[in-house]
Image 1 (spheres, rainbow, N blue to C red):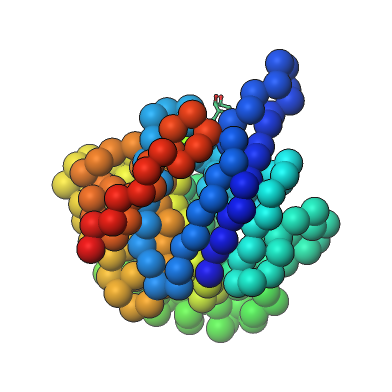
Image 2 (cartoon, rainbow, N blue to C red; image 1 turned 90 degrees about the vertical axis):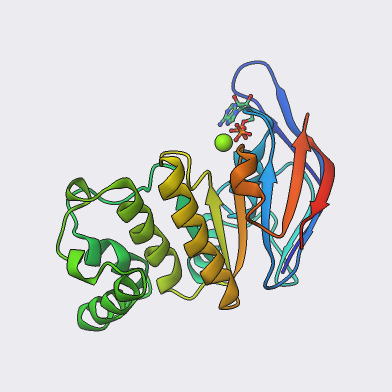
Length: 224
Ligand code: ADP
Ligand code: MG
């Protein structure tokens, strides 16, 4: 599903910062893996490259056997919309749109009719146990509910992979475990997931932990 070969990335705003120093990584279809490392170790940088949100300087990134390199903005957006679902720490919901509209949003970019997108959004909300909250604004929902809406939004376009950057980072520990249980269910249905976290409690709920340190993969821990 994902193959990275010797990925390097340096930021150039200010003095150059060499963040990724030769990352080799493979994620198979159906895996649920976590990427762990200290704050500033390059986890988000790596996830942004996987999500085609950012470029890399050298190496190769294959997604579904397709080389993701030097893409135009348009191509990058097309691949992203078609293949990748995102979940973020801060939920990134649109504050003036209700839960149903937030979930439906990725389908808007695929020119699906309003009626059809809202119908599908209701199905995904139902799966997340949030049907009765469909017409609520994000500000009327708890953190856990907001993250479940973000997960529904990530799923609705049936991506190949879901990338989650600290998905439990803004949640209390009980809600965090509920969100991890939900992501595990999504994985059990066949979805491939990559989850960035700096918390071991969260990482141990995935099947493989990739430890990143000083810009390289330090070790890989297989859990089951
Ligand atoms: P993590 O997610 O593991 O905390 P990041 O990938 O966000 O780490 O950041 C790695 C390093 O790169 C940090 O030192 C951070 O300050 C720096 N960094 C991240 N994004 C940028 C950017 N857009 N421009 C310059 N430096 C950045
Ligand atoms: Mg980060």
